[in-house]
Image (cartoon, rainbow, N blue to C red; front, side, top):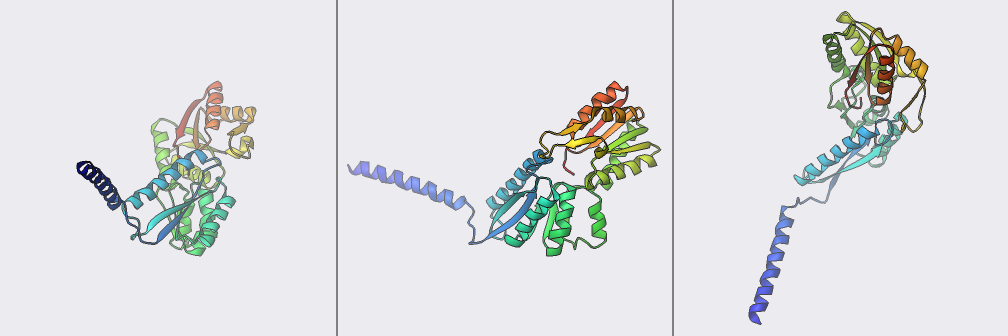
Length: 278
């Protein structure tokens, strides 16, 4: 009987020791938390990209906490959806800054959304904003004009760099006449200008067509892609002067339709699918 009790007690002590060891390995946080805001495109035209980028932000927070947090405090991420809409993004940022009083915001993805948040919320409130995807050269201009207050950062290069690189790739591929279809927003305007300027300097000819010139309608919820007038698209393909260079962000449906009609019109079609938000 005594031997059995001793064996049982030994087991309990062993279990307690394992639990204590596990507790000792877990990070010990002080009675404080640091909350960082995030405004991401979880829905809307950039929803597919935004959901994955948001998961990356959550993973970073988990890694920081497993390493002991920030100055001994647990970090939390307050993630809000901007629906890839500037007005919704501004409302989300105001909630994070005015109500939750976060010291920093990660986001947005779309250059148009990021610019609206920067000029309306973060810069005036002196809150740090860092975007993982907004590439418009406009942000460099705003910084040089002193309108960001030093609170704006981004982890991706400006289109002032990427547009030049893309122009060189196109020129090296033997293209001399291209039609650039771009989104009529800060992202599309900035990238198309940088590409066009660089391509012309290399001796090429560029025809600019913003997407609004070819679209009859975009689904209000931005879930079903584009509804494109077939004749307009065929017309664009025919007038693309033997080569159509498509620059696009999320509109793969437009890319595929243009490729089809360019082929029918006897054009060469080159697509740059860069797979990022902008």
